[in-house]
Image 1 (cartoon, rainbow, N blue to C red):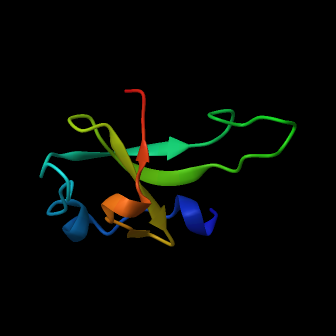
Image 2: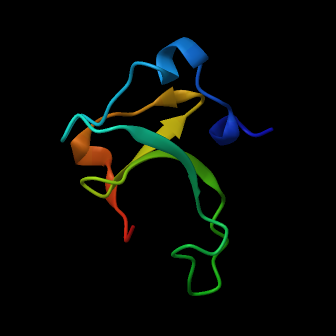
Length: 76
């Protein structure tokens, strides 16, 4: 298991919410063909997604980075 694929602690997972809209966040993986282009490898990255405001927050080493400035827009 790579560092970006580590799971978030269950106690933390139960209390975190989207900092933008306070909505529920769901586990997801970004990469493996999503946005990959120009022949470059795009490694899979764990993230938390908000379906309400369509933002995705990266998870680095099992720690969610819940900064709107570092989030990315999703299509759904």
